[in-house]
Image: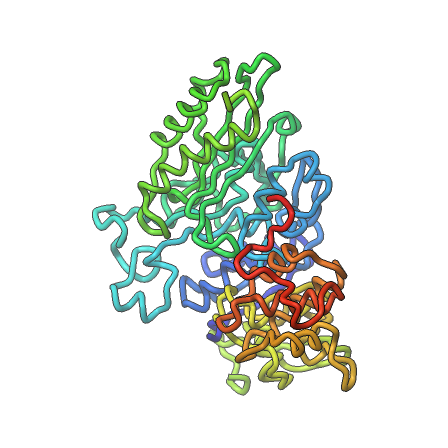
Length: 328
Length: 183
């Protein structure tokens, strides 16, 4: 398929990029690795007349334990010796995204800003026309939840977000009006079209910042997908734990992705377990609570009930893998 | 499309410079063109295949500055000044590369449509890891689909090319994920 025609821009600096974003506001997209945007453009999904390629901006590069540039590629995160030792969950998560050639393309910023996906949206124009267009592209009604009254239920499938949420990461945004930093936990909106709570249209993600205390968590990430080798997740679950020598939980963080229109940090449901003594029984209980706190929409592969059950299973398995105190 | 008159909706083609299989290449390329289209239709190198066109099948894989990339998901103008290597640039003169040779010897090609993609990914793997394990091979080719061979002959070709097996030895297990090391 040919891409729809657009004006291609390749700025060499952040200033140039934000000026371009501001100038073409409303009719512009940013492209990093292209693995999400270009297939959507081929399917004529909300294509714009201007595309800004971010590959030429060196300020968006770089990996350290405190800051990862938005254009750091997934393959670089996966293979970074620094992240593998200090923040291994980020390397682990990156290694599970899609396939090796696509991880050469894909970037942290691109994965974070991944457009929401839906059975009724990620289809060819002919397919979409035949079932009537959906709210997210050309239509007027959500085909997942027809009574949604204008809300889009497309599913967020970025995997890095789940791991970054448990690490307490922040997003650095830049526009012509200046830079600001937002906690990732407050970044996403529950509407699959709105996607971001208050990101302005001319803002671009420059980097992700990770607090120093994140390194004290023991973390893990599990992915549920039909094919390990390439598919988008039907559930991604990241868990972070700090436990003392006596087996008492000092910190417990859990986040899911590919369940709803935004990645969810289950901080409130997990709060009750802090200060409790780890045991096999408690691991089971934590899994149950996580499952109860999760919703799954019926618009990506695998049944929502099954995906919610797998929240409990993954939670338990991760707890057992991280600390032997949960195994007996 | 390349002779279309530029309009607001159809922007003017721009000059693009590449090093294509070691030779410099220069052409007027549409702003929205994919690298795949430039390779196939403007440079006339049709060894690189358009398969799924969505990044799933790996048939369009080429090397950009030595790294395996999918040309169906690469904007041509993102490659300004880059070194592109396609299947046509793998052999040296009349000689096939070790991997291509092994491909023939093991029968890793059946219909052959996916072979260029596998070989472009494979050449990059063998450059990085001259003696990969079976598991490493299977992981590296996870983004390449073959609907004929069932992958056994393909993995065998890697083992033969890297000097770890002889053709016809049945070096590769037929029912495993290749996890000879512990998981």
